[in-house]
Image (tube, rainbow, N blue to C red; front, side, top):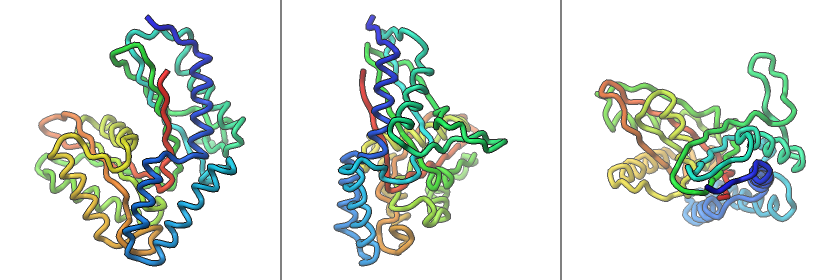
Length: 278
């Protein structure tokens, strides 16, 4: 057994929170650069240049890439041969609290009834899953609500088929318009149950931007949905062109014979995600 102290988890999450706000990962930066180079609209190309410059300034000057520093989702993959000395979820929450306080990041989490701000950007939404091995992987995904609010879920009848899945995703993205600050990354979860579809849609966002699903038939669906989205011409921040979305990541899970859940979780151009293995 490998023992991991909760203090190590707290520090790791603290660093992830601060770094995620300031430093975009290479996958999203490369995707933005590629989008700029293929952009058909001069106005949208100019906006992409500004987004790329904004990311550079944020990283160099240690200021958030976006003022909405988000509500945090944390996926923890816990090896079965790991012993955590303490309360793992509480350690994650403490790491988020410290990161947002010490990083001077905007605290946006509030009670849904009173709307009173918690003042700490906690609680984060934490998912813990057991996996093989003696490591702990922490994947950190803070999302602003311009994009999160545009997400949706439908319980389609199986008769809708794959054509219905494609139609639903494309309609939801087009209906979102410029609200999620495109160019966006679109996470899609198909199958499972009501809640499982939503979780796998969000988790799909953690795949490197543009990396196709390993199943050929699913990868073909991703390509079809992306082409349909970009053919609409809404473009970067709604200014037209051929880059409404940078990628579509679709993952699946077995479902009931009488059901076809489909979840769409939209991510903005400031695709903040970080991970660490302890």
